[in-house]
Image (spheres, helix red, strand yellow):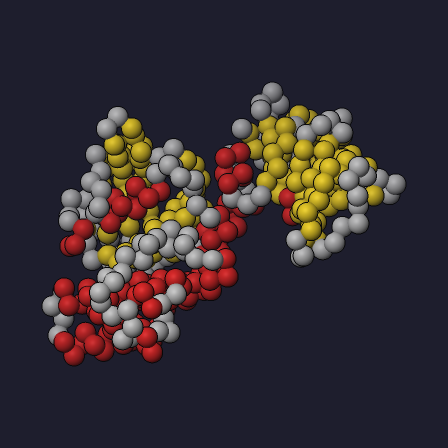
Length: 348
């Protein structure tokens, strides 16, 4: 277990700067996620922590130990890859035991610890099978057991769930989080999936072009995004240009709304963040009520627990609304869109 401290990290590939003077601290024992789209630098940062990429500037510390130039095999890390990276010619038990054997652990201890690790991931009965005889979810459990059995200082995970189907991903989320909590091991998890990041993490860093756009716990990132980029990437958000009137008040399409204006100012490019699941559709013939905008239903998709509705403001902008259950409104219906007062304005 270790606190990870990154100071002024820079990484270039030829003339392309991938990481730009990046600094952060990852608390001992925490589950920390690097979230962002392809090309934002999250995997490069993970590989620098692992020792697979040498940074061009800055430093990386595990507690007080500067490991910036320490070879990967001497950093005492556990690594779980997207493609599992299991040895096809070794049994499940031998795959899990590989790191212990490389560290010259006594043979009887190797067997005991490998069995314990397989028990933790529920695969002891598959110890004598080969990776090709396992499902994708089982192979990922083997990879996780192999990473944890060596009792590493830090666990690193690079998009470990992306090759699994939707149901298995949910199951493996629980497995990963439960094992991480039991081991109380500092974990850095890379993903482009915002739902994974919100569900698993103690802290999330949203990355953009080699920098951290915003960092915080899942609840604060979702409820209080600081930029349009973060608002759009973390959760499903509609971004609506607004005119700032006063503290707590903005104008949209000729209507005044009472919302959280945050740091908005008159004359700035202010945008209202509207979470699609927080919006409510009401019949236009219903009178009374504040914080309403006139909209027209363009289309809908029924998904069981919710219906995705596309609506157009009277001013023309199209928004998405996640309405619960079955919606009886038909395309072309004129409706009211209720905006929660907790909706937040950000400066683009």
